[in-house]
Image 1 (cartoon, rainbow, N blue to C red):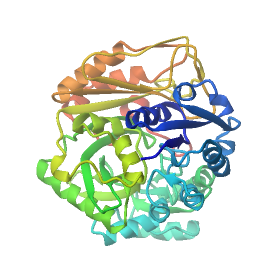
Image 2 (image 1 turned 180 degrees about the horizontal axis):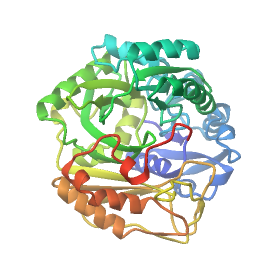
Image 3 (image 1 turned 90 degrees about the vertical axis):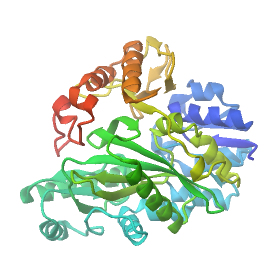
Length: 450
């Protein structure tokens, strides 16, 4: 086991990793920006080191600064959390050169899955059904030819993308050029890579992802699926597990396909394989996220598996502590992402939090970095807290989530809690009747120019 882990991240996920390390008896170092020098991760870590100013490019995305921080503090491993450098082959390679363990997949796997077009080819070869689409496209003319062949509507996606950036839905040919150029600019700004590709756009779909864990000895297990269908502009708003759409037979079949695909590409550590489920019940692979996911707590709640501790153990060379036969899903779990945003316009709401009270009680977990007197920074994403509830069944998990959100008090900034409460009272949501277009009724469809 490691003696000291450097956490190259911030906010609630940095605290989550500190919790796992403390339980494992591993010391922690938080590498933070100047904007986060008074944050709770800095307070609770064993050591802290400032790696640069507030701008992410100069701090949380600064690989030389992070490697230097690990070396001067004597850390023998780096955990990147999610976002920032969590899927960076550059950081993984730098760790290898400097004899520091990267807590994540190998660099060659990161390179493969970081290129969505290559990943699609690899998954097709491994036996997964893939959404019909293209390779990376050179220019608008190639995109026009591909769109005619695929048929409208299509979706433009960043080749090196994720998190909803560099994505545009195109329903008509006269919209293609503007969307193609805009998606390329956004992809370059977000990922340093302007390449994009096309897929057919599947209407009325469900978005499901399977959680995978794999050790270096080749043991690979899945922890079931998460329902991630409720999204706005390709950003997840509420997640739950298990999905109402899957029978035990389909879940078992998909789990076997996913673990087989993970072994085929030499996957190690934690990751997720994401799928669209169309109205006829057909699965299509979209992408694999080679990192910890924001919504991992709901899987932890129903399986009892600490995914972050498993990540650290795997990276240290240990075998998985579970086998597939050990995985049992008990009850139902829901996560609401509480963002510092206006609940209708989604305009970010940075500022000073004057009052902050989160709920407790049976079946409630809150992962957050926030507290009264802290400042929500304008420099980073607006996630304030993840409220997670667990119940014996879905209705109990929903009841607990409503109760938990109603007892949450956050003053000083706007939050998305009113939107979550509207969703949790909606008859179609309660009945499980929803698709990726569900939130349009609450906030209106995303405009391609946004």
